[in-house]
Length: 118
Image 1 (cartoon, rainbow, N blue to C red):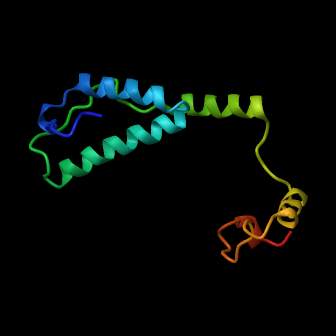
Image 2 (image 1 turned 180 degrees about the vertical axis):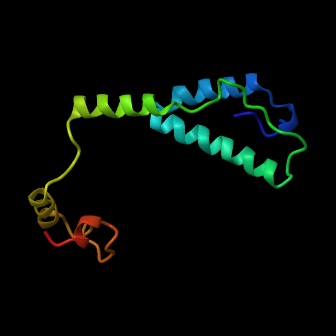
Image 3 (image 1 turned 30 degrees about the vertical axis):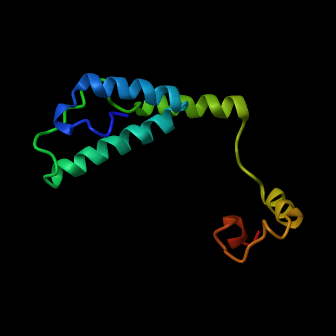
């Protein structure tokens, strides 16, 4: 995003503002945007804690992840638009019964619902 030859010391809040604009274009939901911003900030925080950069990287006020209110509002809108996303026990049994051999696996984590007996 910043380029391979770009030095961390040369990064300014305007650069992170531009990065956020690119992230907003790519990641459509607030949860995805939150994750990407947090990952980016974590990398720089790791570098600062371990002395890999000469000075503190200033992100600016605009390079913040979406707030909890925005995340909750988006979840509510998704639930209202698409309904509750949950399977009942009978639906899980039908999915397992109709699954082809490639979908059925001996790995219990491939389909976590197989762990429970309904």
